Image 1 (cartoon, rainbow, N blue to C red):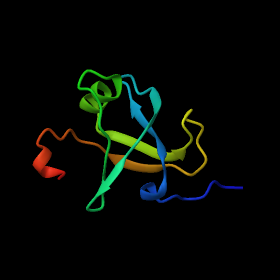
Image 2: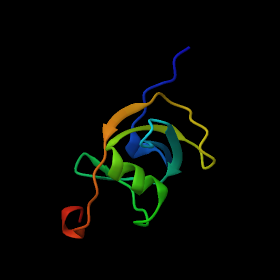
Image 3: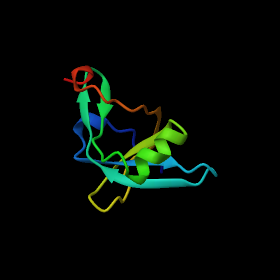
Length: 89
């Protein structure tokens, strides 16, 4: 049985999959917020997921619990850094 597609706006946590330079995937449970059909996650600038997104913007997200246990299908996406709070307010 295939995992269901999910609506990120309705989930408390999502698993954010980012990629190391060597292509290895790293999954991290995060909170996200929807603003105008885009999803945002806040993180410290020196966090591993931020470094990986700087290296490659390719990401995937899936619904998960607080421990990162995935319970939906994955959605492919592209991430970018936002430094101007006016762009997301």
